[in-house]
Length: 271
Image (cartoon, rainbow, N blue to C red):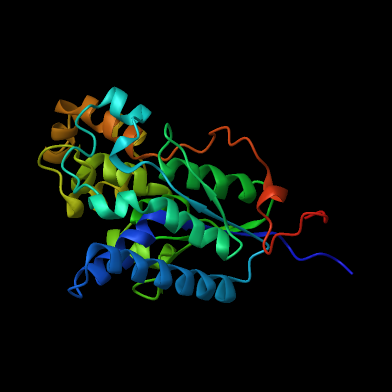
C-alpha cells in the first residue's frame, strides 16, 4: 500500500497564541486565569487544526518576539521598533504553552537567532521542493509571498484561505509580486519604509505594467519616466532595502529533517 503524499502543517505559534490570549484578556480574568484559559483553547484549537488538515507531519514555530536579534535588525535597526510587546504574563507562560503543543503530539521549533517567519518559509519551501505539501496557519499576510501549488496559507480566525485569489483581490498582483509590492509601499507594522509617495494603488499599477522591481528600476532611468517612476529613481536604495527586508529567508539550517516531526509521532516508522 502506497504511503500518503507528505503534508506538513506549520503553525505560526505566537501568531496563534497572542490572538487566543487577547480574547481571554478581555474577559476580566486574572493573568493566571487568562493563561490557563489560553492554554485550554490552544489545545482545543490545535486539535481542530490537526483534524481538519490531516497532516503527515506537524510543527509549531516560535521565536523570541522582540528578543530575537535577527539579520534584519542588523541591517535596519528601526525594524519592528514600534511593534507592541508581548504581555509580560504571556511571555512568562510561554513554556507552558509550548507544552500544550507537545501534548497534542506537535513538536515545537524555537530560535533565539532566527525569526519565526524565516523558519516557516524555510520549512514550507523545503517540502515544496520535494513535491510535498505545506499548510501554514497564520493571519500574517507576509506568508502569501510563498503561495504556490504546494504551499497554502490558512487564516484560522477569519476562516479563510489566503490564496492567490485573495492576493489578487487585496493587492491586485500575483503572490510572486508581493515582495516587490511591499518594497514600493513599505509595511507599517514592521516599520519598513517603501518609496515615499507610492501607495498601494500606484504600486499595483506599476507592477501590472512592468512586472517586477528590477524592470521598474530600468524603466525609471528612461527619459520619459512618469512621476511615480521618478520617485522610485530618487528612492531606489530605500526600495531595495525594503525588498530585502520583506523577502522571507528560505534556506536556514534547521538541524533536523521531516521524519523528526511526523504526526502522529511514530518513533519506529519511516515517513
